[in-house]
Image: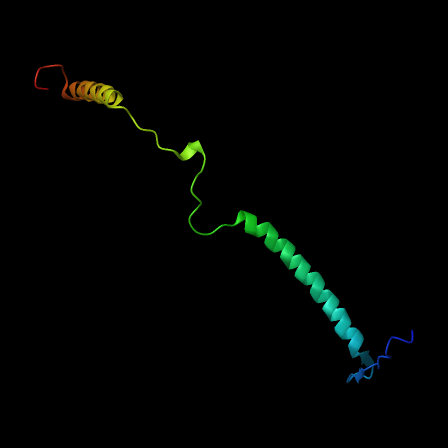
Length: 101
């Protein structure tokens, strides 16, 4: 012990089983354990916060989510092709290729 340090009084507590407990050491040990547990909790929260997300996802900033527009000519080609396809299906269902289907 140096001159600058004040002397700490050892506080003990008599337990019902007949032994003494140094309360200041017990408190110090508990605080150390609490600090270790807090660090473990912080580390675990760091792991889960990056994988678990709540709420609406953020808007996409890449070109992946951009909706593509179809030109009127392309729309017309697809329309004609689908009408042809439906007409073929209808003919097969009705059992022939007569006019008025």
